[in-house]
Image (tube, rainbow, N blue to C red):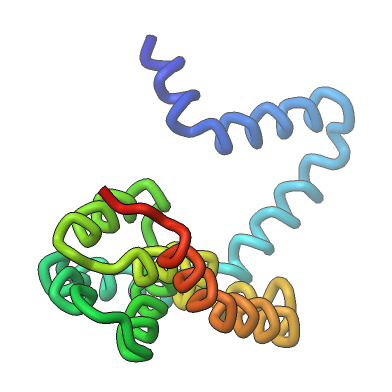
Length: 166
């Protein structure tokens, strides 16, 4: 029972270990090369991951739900769209961790446009921009993030216009 739970909770690790066992059983001569490439990649990414984790800790401690609800209640202006973009791009947990906050914001009077803008900018992860640049290039990163930032308020305005809140 404990192994099943471990495998379910850590399926990527289990999958990699199974793949490694397949390599060992089929091409034992490639095991050293496989491990060498994997550890080199891990070492190269460590320099980027450490600042990312520190950034995640900073924003997780800084984001206060009550402060966010106060900032987004009332009329939607450029300021609210800016703040919504900051929240969406800096929220580092899974999307499921953001949903209760967004529901609370809506319940407390935040506009649908702001909530939709947060969701639209969730695709941009400020803490991961260095990793995105390293893996995908600065041109891709700049275009991707620029397009998402430009589209987010439009998505918010469309959602505000067509949504019906209870």
